[in-house]
Image (cartoon, rainbow, N blue to C red; front, top):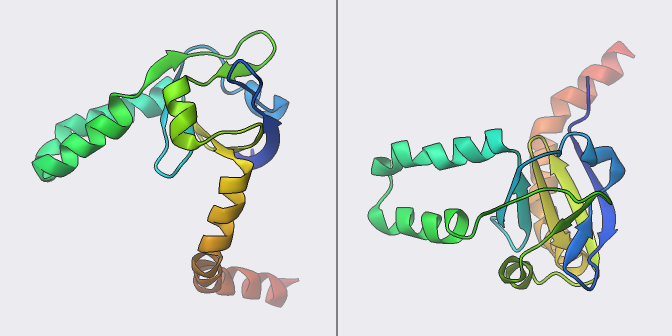
Length: 153
């Protein structure tokens, strides 16, 4: 099994570029899509994932018009094509950097076909704020998993 998740520290340089960790670079080659993330972060997606997001237009009738317009304005209209430079960095457009409040210290997370880039301070605050929810989920999901290993092992 190949682990398609993980986090690494990174930095934003003076030109608005973030160094993508080496272990993520192989998968994120060629054309990529960059846009606002759901929280105060940046999303970088492979074209396959982006196409799935764009295809949501086909089910847009299920959303109230107001929600659909908010979705388009936040995610689709902010998107740009990009790619890693030769040094493994990605340029974050200023409007998206401002939205994510990126400063020098960043966290790059991989979740399958998507990278998310967070300002380290915002990431730490997000984890602290959501710690009770994460623990509740782990308690619900993890009890059987960890108990099964203890019985077998």
